[in-house]
Image (cartoon, rainbow, N blue to C red; front, side, top):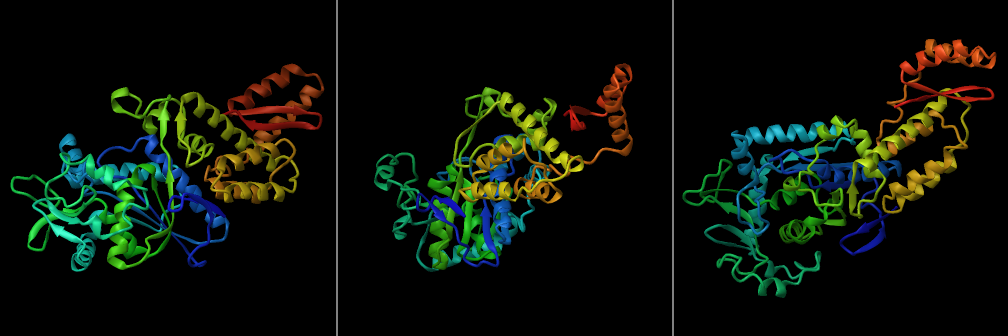
Length: 452
């Protein structure tokens, strides 16, 4: 299996550290607002990663975090905490906002038929462990105190710029006004923020005799250390996390524990909508409820995502999701053949599809292999199960065998048509159509298909 590793900027052969379990961490949502369809693209791709690893025979321990504190509106450690912002907008407490939006996220996560993570961890459940990590960094001399918080001195970690290929000199030259005078270096970042006089912050904990809260980057290092241990096999996230969030995670972890954080880093690209960046001001922020109003399901959306690649920028349009909906219907009808015809040997098709998935999660290539095979093959139950194991599109679940009564009607209609009793055939055809079933007539009988 080969994966593109952001760490080396190369496609590399993936071998787990321990073949008894693959350790994966995927950055989760900040639950201050509803997640839109663009936010869920990455989770579909990381679900594909987990499914492919499982098909390779490797058990997976996957941790997903939920950010419910500390994510500021600016990556430069200033601005309002996003959870506080959401609470003011909704007229609720930060805890109520976190519960509401986390619930909505998980509801859609499960509706997309994702493999359940081993652990789903909320940042606020790891405050004690956060302070232990801060203590370790402080004792090793990586932190310094400011009126704003405890900051990590990036000059003491020589490899700081390596992961994101940062130009720190250029950053320093352009940041004289923008950054606090208390920062030693423009790239330094807060691991713990102090509550300052007059600051209204609902989430705060006592640490070193003062009230404060963790910096956004801290939770990931803490949760990985507590739940998986370093190094992990794969760390996943969006490309926007490379220059700041993931760079800071690496610095914290490697300096605190003296170990590499992750062997592989996978980053997904963004989607645009109708060729434009997703933006509330443009009115192109779509939720799953918006898709459902237009007749598209979570599985239709998942089908659309899997037709692309996690490293490619994708453009979403309703024309394209309509095509994805039809493609998924074709797969359901292909799966329905297993109750109507004798199965063929599809082991070579499965191998060809796995070759594509093993090639940097090329789901589009794997689906193309399936498309090529459908005109000359009939799947058995095992092959249909493989499709669901690989993609999680509920193909088997959404193609129940039709009733004996309906099968009898299909046989009677075919017989009536063969005997040129077209009036009876038409009546039976309409009754069958009312059940959402379409018919394809052949020399030996009729094949039934789902109409939608």
